[in-house]
Amino acid sequence: MTDSTLSGASPRQPLVLRFPAILIFMACLALFTVGVTILSEGFGIGLISTSFVKTLGKTLCLCLVALAMDLVWGYCGILSLGHMAFFGLGGYAIGMWLMYERTRLIVVESMSAQALPPTPEQISDGIASQIFGVVGASEFPPIWAVAHSLPLQLAAVVLVPGLLALVFGWFAFRSRVTGVYLSILTQAMTLALALYLFQNDSGLRGNNGLSGLQNLPGLGNVPQSVVSVWFLWASALALALGFWLATWVVSGKFGSVLRGIRDDEARVRFLGYPVESYKLFVFTLSAVIAGIAGALYYPQAGIINPAELAPIASIYLAVWVAIGGRGRLYGAVIGAAFVSLLSTWFTGGQAPDIVLGNWRIQWVDWWTVLLGVSFVAVTLFAPKGIGGLFDLLADRLTPNRHGADLGPDQGALREKEASE
Image (cartoon, rainbow, N blue to C red):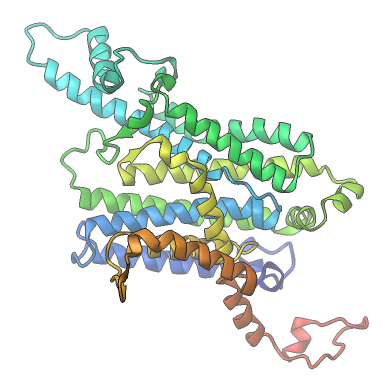
């Protein structure tokens, strides 16, 4: 079920008709979302706990960032080991507003008992002391200048990761850095950003990060069981739109050029295509998608700190895409969901320990080893990943042409004639 097999209609037909996988994906995602809603504590019969609903919502966000990773790696051949930096920046952008507004409500309520109403300066000083007292500061850094504005912070969710990717990509692609050297550069970018954010004077509370993000300002009376379902819906909608957008990007002539760059960049450049512009567009777009995924993820996680931007997180992201099957958008989604949920099961203490004589395998400690072995095994023995299973199914459903020439030209195999 590769892109070539999914497309059997004229390019002038609507995208969903040319790529039926979109409808299949949307239907599966809708059924999943409705099923979880019915079984949740907030809107349903309560068979699924609120914490697990949050886990499922976060998993959908990880599927979205895996989709972004597959755009640049699976279709354009750019192995980025820094995409979780864009993911984290999106989380920081929305987290700043959440923390500011929640703290503002607390400060205003505490000052309401005073004889004289507080001035805006007193409220601002109180908010700054509450947020930055943990790092020994009492004033807002310049980076928080628009933290009070939800529209501006939502714009930052898109603009900050997008601008960073645009600037970094412009320098890297203009210099024609490719292959493993580009991967090292993206990893260095992520490491530098994480190390900077660990500093207390970064303006984002250093190692403490931003916390309490699960408490939506002005909705203190709404239980978390309801809020978790709201975020599940938002995450599912974002994943659906992201899948549609990614499918549109990789379809048609644009997608063909991307795959050409992946397979033989020099030949595509020789044919006259602006390779650097194609790579820069896809790299920037994928960063924006990753930022949106992070903005939805961290309010469900409740906290974000610089450790979330560590290079190892981006390496995990590449492992998810590889296990799911890179170069297949649905494969990236499947890989992220499968590994993420399996990781939650193993590291959450739910997997039973294995006793081998004097040895005791505790999966909390051995999960990363199992993940690494799985990545090596998939690379060596199943390079198409889990998505390759769908390819096998598609091959079985394809009409048996028996090698006959079914068109006016020798070797032409026409789907319509073959099925008759």
